Amino acid sequence: MNPDALITQVQLNIGVTADGIAGPRTWNAIYEKIFGQPATTTDLDAIIKAIQKMAGVTPDGDPGPLTWTAISNSITSVAEEPPAEPNTGNAGDKVDSRSEGVISSLLPEVQPLARQLVHKAAAAGITIKIISGLRTFSQQDALYAQGRTAPGPKVTNAKGGYSNHNFGLAFDIGVFENGKYMGESPSYNKLGPIGVSIGLAWGGNWVSIKDTPHYELRPAWAKDMPESDMLAGLRDRKARSVSLLV
Ligand SMILES: [Zn+2]
View 1 (cartoon, rainbow, N blue to C red):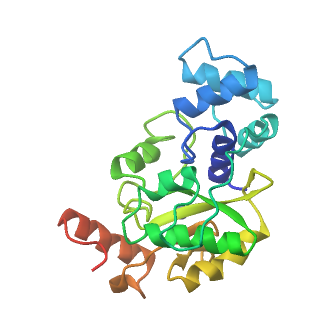
View 2 (tube, rainbow, N blue to C red):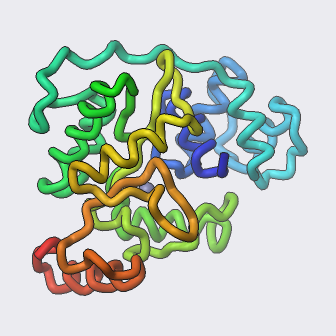
């Protein structure tokens, strides 16, 4: 599992926003979970080192995959919220509250597709939640700064406007089994064709780096474009404040 997915998994299990970004809130929540009390310092570096020490990895203040695996193994899952109300499986029906929170960040055209995917997955016996949606340009820039001009490990190579999560068109799902988030599961591959059947593009179909939790609505004008050209088109439309989809 890549560090991003591990961070998301840890965040889901400690009950903070699962954005894959390990900021002060995430580190403090991990600290409290592991030590049973809030940290007495605001020194993030000290907090990270204390957590690394407790998790049994080298306390170098530079958390990589080893640290995240150790953290993931040393925290237990928080209680899951009860399942959403039974529904008729219509695209308009609301899903669980965590997913709805993320769905509200997506473009209105994408929202029913995300809900539909949750319903179709449930009908196939798979529980999913929408765990990541829009990242604003400034959130993406903050993420890009991490490991470069800001503390922490590098987590992305994309600046604001260079990730398909910056436009409200893309979202990531998490598969849940027995109430626990699964970073890896055969269900991700099972769901891909279902997502495609409702009009979404699926990250599992990417040629270079497959991203099986990732779905996006590709604008009609970008149908056969490479990802980088689509992103350029999206940045341009956003700068001109015109519809991203037309
Ligand atoms: Zn994604």
